[in-house]
Image (cartoon, rainbow, N blue to C red; front, side):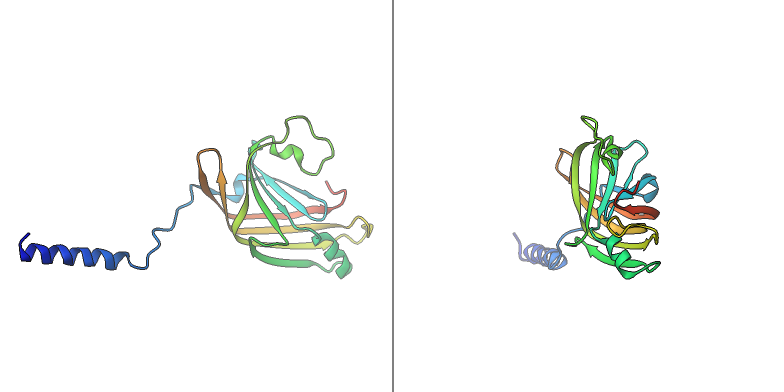
Length: 185
């Protein structure tokens, strides 16, 4: 190799190395973006479970926020309980489920064999969750009832549907005026 060619090759190699130094690679793009409007069926129960499913009940987002309805009642009549967490969080569980008949298993004591059929599930690995619960004054303190509003923003799930992990992102999901508490519907 002649000296000018060698110098040019070394220069090109140095430029390439400099361009790549300190980079971790491109940010992965989500393989699926879920819009809140894709999950139109919502409900809640217990203290405090909220869910939203697709119309065909093949995709669900489930949020378990233990104690939110009780905290609202402990604060007093018509005093709301509000909390905001960055996911993942120890006190809040946000899950993505993929399968069939996913709406059949929430807030019921009657489970039909084979329903719901959860073929894959993933915990949220990033995002923000915010809940507000307003207690219902007439509720029994043993079975606190309330109305919840939940907002999930920029939630990321890494789920394996059988072909390796995929990143799914929920841009924004807002559930409003969902009855929660024991014996809620």
